[in-house]
Length: 172
Image (tube, rainbow, N blue to C red; front, side, top):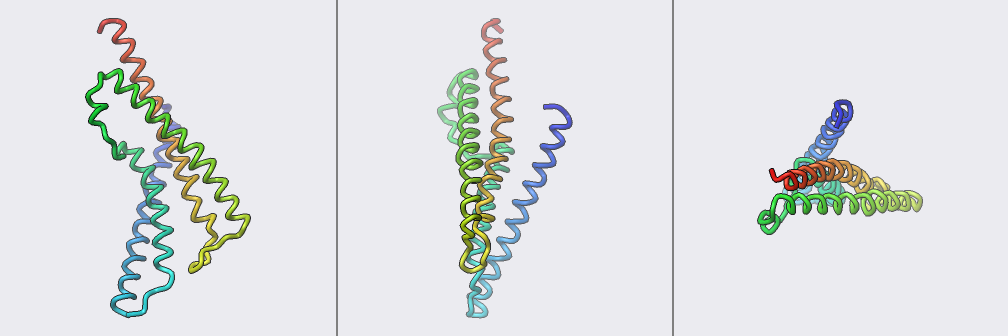
């Protein structure tokens, strides 16, 4: 990846991580306020549960993007770890291609359609009166980042696979 593209990606990475951290901080404050109003004031806040749900959507989806970028996603690699390096690289190619296609078609394209439809129908949340399209924006945004990161790792994995096959053919 050339230097200017790397700088852009690093800037996007920092923005994404800041957004996840901010959403998580607001979520902690929101849940703390809910507990305080419920158990100390004995008059639970009417909007905190809804806000917590919406923030969990954003934290979960955007956090998945951060985890993929850091290669920190959960994986069961017991069987893959027993494969030869070439077959392991092939599995990575298939896995990143699947993540990229799912993220593109389901999260980005499907999520964008969902956002559009809910904004056109002017669907709002009951307690906060937030347009639900804004809540669902987490889908195409996380989809964008997941496509970006999985494409990057797919290219790396293809390069690794090609190098391994060349090495195997040359006997080295």
